[in-house]
Picture 1 (cartoon, rainbow, N blue to C red):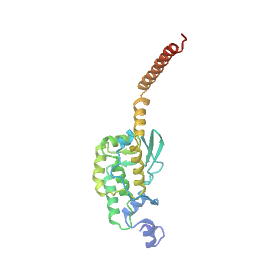
Picture 2 (picture 1 turned 90 degrees about the vertical axis):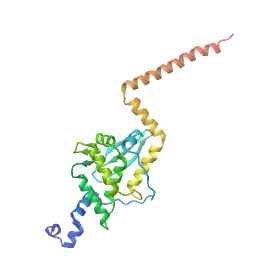
Picture 3 (picture 1 turned 135 degrees about the vertical axis):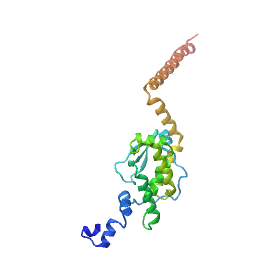
Picture 4 (picture 1 turned 45 degrees about the vertical axis):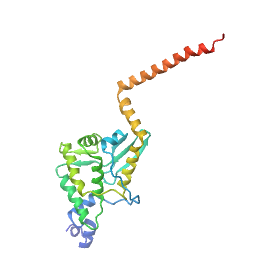
Length: 231
C-alpha cells in the first residue's frame, strides 16, 4: 500500500519499502551492510566493559546511530578508544530486538547485522557494573532505571545471537583482545587511574620522587669529595 500511495507499482513498492513491517524496521536499523573481507577466526571471549576500562580503553559515543558504526583504535601506549552508537533501552526494546533477530534467522535474504550487534554488546556486558560504566560514558541510555533489566535482556537475547567471525565486529573484537593481552596497556592504565586522576595521590607521588632525587644528590655530594680528595 505504501508503494501505491507513492505512485509506484506493487513490485516497486515491495522492492523499495520492504516485504513486511519487520523488514522495514530492519532496514531502518541496519541500512547498508559494509563490505568486509576478514579472517574466519573468532574470539571465544571478549573482556567485559569494566575489564576493557581497566586495560585503558576509553568509551566514546559514535557520531551516527548506525549499528555498523563500531570501531576500536589504539590511541597511545596507555590505552585505546572504543566508539559505539547510543543504545537506548526501554520497555519495548526486548520485544523489538528479539523480533528483528528472529526475522534474520527466518528470512532467507536477511543478513545477521542485528544478531551480530547484539552479540557484540552481550560480550562486553556481563554485569550491572558494565551497564553503569557504559551509561556514564553516554553509550547506554536506560529509560527503565534498572541496570539489572539491561543485563537480563542480553542474557535472554544471546541465544538468538551469532558468533562474530568473518565480519567487521569480529575484527573489532580481535583488536580489543590484542590490546588487553598487552600488559603494558594495563600497567599504564593502572598508573594513570591510581596516581594521575587523584590530585592528593599525585602530589604525594611527586613529593616522594623529589625527596628521592634530593636524597640521591645529597649522597653523591657526600661520597664524591671523599674519593676525589688528594692525600
